[in-house]
Image (cartoon, rainbow, N blue to C red; front, top):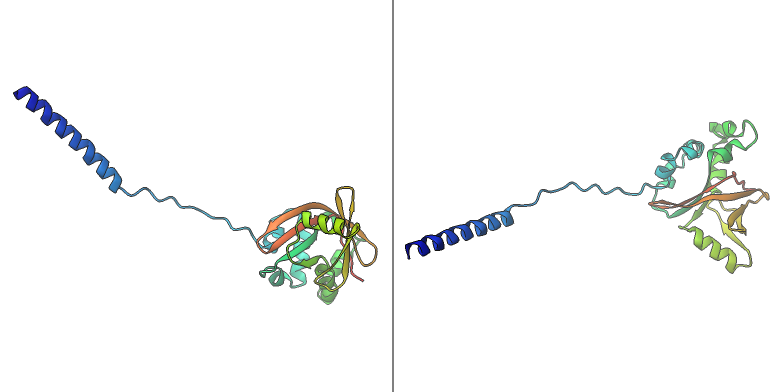
Length: 187
């Protein structure tokens, strides 16, 4: 009988220790992990973070459009790459970046911007729904014609110049960027 009591007490003590350990673990707060939530940058932040848009960013700064393109928007920006700016006649970019040409530069840059967030699929649908061409009004005020050449979206400016969307749907917190291979010009 003594042996049964000793074994029973050992079971009670062991069980109590298990319950005590479990209770203690439940009362221990888990280690808090720092969660870093990265927000998508705005249009200017996205362009600034991409070396292929360094000329565009310099132009946006020279035209004092950083604040405007950093607002809530939303905006759709047809963003010329550095190669697009390099394709302009020699000296054009340097001339446009001069303070005395700020009005012209602002007009050119805002011609690349459309109000609203227009994704590539929306552009293609609008082109197809409108007989193969879709005309949009830019923030600058002039019209821009969008069309398709195979699977490529083509922008035709007021002077008949053309640009092709090279990369679509680059997300920004206040809109979207579509990289283009040429600088388009207003009238």
